[in-house]
Image 1 (tube, rainbow, N blue to C red):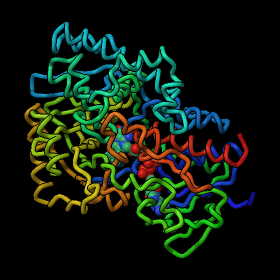
Image 2 (image 1 turned 90 degrees about the vertical axis):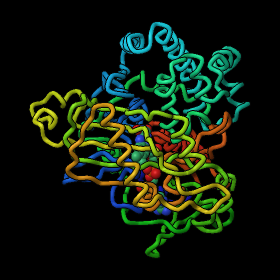
Image 3 (image 1 turned 180 degrees about the vertical axis):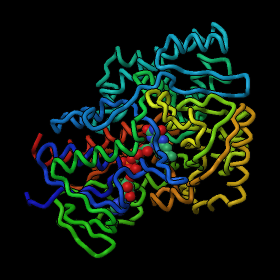
Image 4 (image 1 turned 120 degrees about the vertical axis):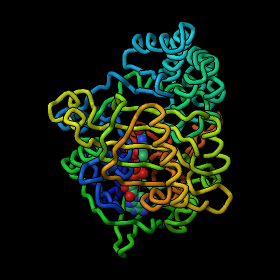
Amino acid sequence: MSRSPNILIGAGIGGLACAATLAARGEPVLVLEAGDYPGGRMRETHPGGLNVDSGPTVLTLPKVFEEIFSAAGENLKDHLSFDPLQVLARHAWSKNERLDLFANHQQSKQAIAEFAGGSAADGFEQFRKEARNLYQALYPTFMTAQKPSLFGLASQIGPFGAMKLRAGAPFQSLWDALGRYFPDPRLRQLFGRYATYVGSSPYLAPAVLMLIAQVEMEGVYAVKGGMAELARALAELCRRQGVEFRYGQRVTRIHAEHGRVNAVECADGSRYAARAVVYNGEPALLASGNLGPEVKSAISREILNTEPSLSALTYAWSARAKDFPLDYHTVFFSKNYHQEFKEIWDERTLPSDPTIYICAQDRAPSWETSANSPARKDMPERLFAIINAPALRQPRRKDACPPTAEAIAQTKEAAIQRMQDCGLHLEIQHEVCTGPAEFAKLFPGNGGAIYGQACHGWNAPFKRPGARSSLPGLYLTGGGIHPGPGVPMVALSGRLAAQAILSDQGKR
Ligand SMILES: Cc1cc2nc3c(=O)[nH]c(=O)nc-3n(C[C@H](O)[C@H](O)[C@H](O)COP(=O)(O)OP(=O)(O)OC[C@H]3O[C@@H](n4cnc5c(N)ncnc54)[C@H](O)[C@@H]3O)c2cc1C
């Protein structure tokens, strides 16, 4: 085996998790990153000079990262402080319709009973149990396993596990399944939001996504300093383990010889020999030949025909928030969810009456109460707003045009109005807007989609490529790769890529 390093193309969370896992086993690793920071979509923007998390905003399943650190002989908590959220999210439909979900499920049950009655609370109890069953059956057999097939999964979970899974009707749509527990449309809307956590429509996504409820109930954490600190902590861990990082290096071609990947080439003409290459970019770019003819067939071309996930219209604001008790996470729901998703998925336009998600980063429990909290001092605070939007890439069709400045302005106005209808008045001082066109430019290859491929249809989770490509020496990690998008899932995919390399290089 040559002494060339394993090359990671991209320092997203998948790339970093893979690099850290390989380096912890003493493997030489070189990371080539097109941008100038680690974390990819886990990024910050700077309205009015403030650091605002402008990608993922909370940490779930910290055990995944704890395991990555402990494999390297370190403790995550020595490098990162995180704060459990007692209120998972505040939800608002109008000035008088608000519902908090809590880390403590008894508190949530009580709140649901007060909001929608005792039978809704019983429905929640049933929903929660089924979400837990799904999670317990699928975490060890699907999420942490190298790309399982449906049949492989069935044999792994056994008849008892299969019975538990079937009870959750995982092949129904999430929306239909939620109807069994929640006759109240507002609760269906609230729990249907889990589909959007993986960039999908609640009307088309499989009910198996209910398991996200269990992921949240295991704990949702605000990271001190913002989520970008997690990416920096992982990059520092990599460095301490000897990983070399080169930023500003876009890989334009992956080379293979004698049926095996052996080198990569960058936009500036530099070439690096590699014993293995892990690609953390958009998988559609591989299949379309963008990284060279030798790797074009390394994954199925089917990826080009799959629907990209949602994109987003996002705003990082420094703003004063008045007349509404924002929590760390607050969701303001649209009046007509069905119409919202019809506009996004069928008409491929920005929603005319959007649901808005706001992260109020300065309101994390342990620092909101500090005397320096901006909200306490009536100073502008850091807010990050996400509105679902269609991606620009369309399967089997020409890419859609980006939304016009006028359409963006109209959607923003509707969002501000929606928040006002629920009581929130914002005095915005500074703003950074990132929409589908900007996401497509920052992370090319999937039309600005932010979560890989949409998870639509019962078998979508089985269609994602796995860590091993069909070309020896080429591996994959990221939101478009098994087990899918979201920060902990992507980290698992990085770990799976590292495990595949170690195993293929005979280092079990
Ligand atoms: C607005 C927003 C909100 C989100 N909210 C959440 C949330 O609340 N919870 C959650 O879990 N997830 C959330 N996500 C999704 C989450 O951020 C992603 O699933 C995850 O960060 C993707 O990681 P990744 O490993 O796929 O890499 P990416 O973040 O896609 O990074 C890939 C990296 O590879 C680099 N790269 C690509 N091609 C090349 C090349 N050819 N040469 C060199 N470098 C290359 C890119 O520059 C980039 O840095 C959100 C995302 C966004 C954008």
